[in-house]
Length: 444
Image (cartoon, rainbow, N blue to C red; front, side):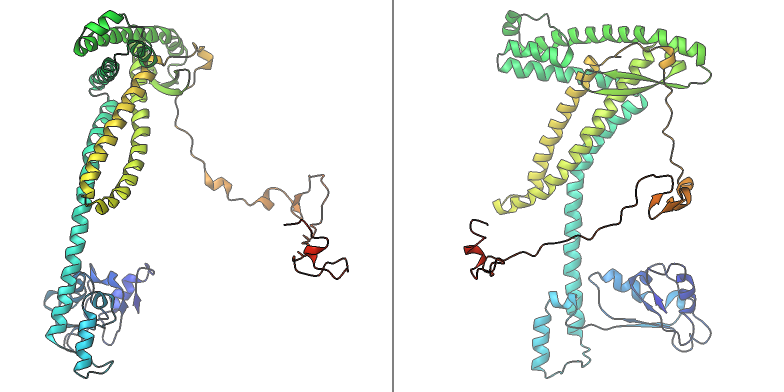
């Protein structure tokens, strides 16, 4: 019997027969864990289950698991492992030294060697491999800790947006952070015109701050002034969107409210568009303000998800590239931490600006009529059971063309390939000259 990972249906039968008298079962390492072999009649008296291993593994744990198949729960058993100096484990750790010693002792090829030196050499090799693997896993966890801290920040923001917890607070902080970045950037450069254009580009706000105020006041004062202007504008815009959407939502609720649970409301900033699913009853009950809440939720989730997926790709590339830092005698992990922090900070800055820009510039493009309202439904799944009929069963064909097709049946023609003439071959014209000196003059 052969016990491997390819015959799942027969595995139970093979394991059940493995403990019978005279049964030999050849197994891979999959039999080393979670496999209990019940001994048959007369097997205990014969010495129990005998385990024969064909190699020693890199991990001592795997060897112990294989040995542990015998002698379970007080049953008798034995185990014997055979090792060759050509095995991977011995070849990597000291096989040349041991083989040289065997030659000096006059031991021939194929002769059985049983000595404590061999056993200790194998255990030392296994210990080195285990220490190396432990170091690799420890290093990998240190890299994962960097990603885990970033993942916690992103998932917290996403959870707040998804369930509505602290969404207003997060958006307020986002607007303040973007305002502070804009003021700081252009204040340091003493660029008032750039500040005005950036306020219009991101917030659609023509600021009341004058050039004199921009030059005389400090950054914190300018941030507070601009932040109040921006939040006042956003409140007015929110009320306008609610008033714009409420009449249509009210009409749809009165006529088809018993049939529609969620309703699709489109938003666009002139470049990008987004379809927002809004609960109809709740939107009517709070005079259309639910539309804006759903709009904010969808915008935050959309931009965070897109940016996070791109950031994960960049982090994978960064992890590969920082390994070259060892040639500069630098710790790749430290370089990875510094670069990852900078990437994450830049990603958050870009996401905040994209969210703020769409929230302030986005709006309902045209007021939809009640007849044009579309209900938010999940996309229907394709039923593959209806697609098992082959094409000849659907349409009767003759030579690959349906009978209803009036096209002529064209017989496929063979493809002809002309023989290529070499430059040094005789010219086919019969002149006796080489092709390159006759009709092939000037050809490549």
